[in-house]
Length: 317
Image 1 (cartoon, rainbow, N blue to C red):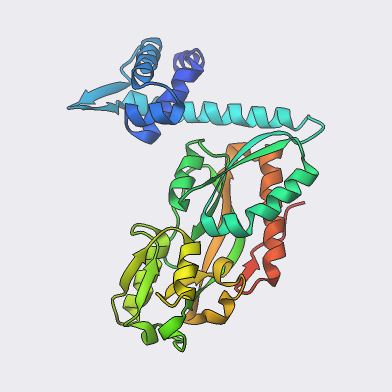
Image 2 (cartoon, rainbow, N blue to C red):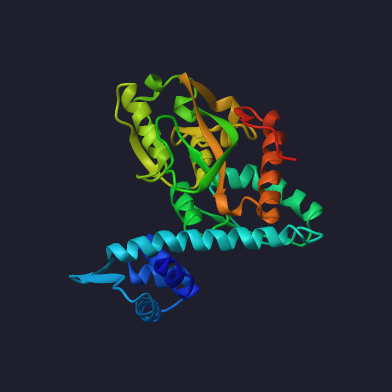
């Protein structure tokens, strides 16, 4: 009982900083994420430690880490912040109109195909709702959504390459997207991976799920790809392929647009990535986040006429 009483009297800002420190790992990263100086973070953690009456952090060499008591308090802090988020969301349900700000993270091909029609629908239906869109690599965006930097993320998952799962973050499928070999120029007649074993390739940077998938597909076909062009910009991929400078593997959200479909050949066996939305479970009653999620699902339904893509679920009402 005494422990519960002590926790309820702790400073909420300090609890938020402690949780952020647990997520980020350093004072500098915590300060950058929260918009404070490292010294301010250090002072707040010291104040929280005095309130708690037990050491919450300990210095090991030049690094600061949580003590066992600090780790236990982070668990409580996470629950407190989630409860507060749910309370705020439920209060917003009583408003006559959907309003507020939703921070949305999205990767490039989804930003190009899904976000514009979704935002147009939101502007028409909820003029007081403000959506801040940030392009972000899906793995990092999922972590940042769990850490409360974003409210909602559009992420992707490639075959045999699961995206990270975070506690209390719910996923909803959005689009099933076919991955195809896209060729042009001197490789225009190629239809299989084996046909482009000697080709120049364009791929995303190392460490991304799409790069891992593309390299493994080539290696399974019996060759190491000659990657001449490395960029996260899929529009650049399209230009290099159309110009006959490289070949590449592109998702339906990219090759299904314009004239690219004529250059795209199915893989054998066929391969698909899954596009999904993810949000913290504590925000499930937030009408603003729900409105953005629904608009994205309806935009996904409209993609059913695009080659290579299929909506995964019917939109929420």
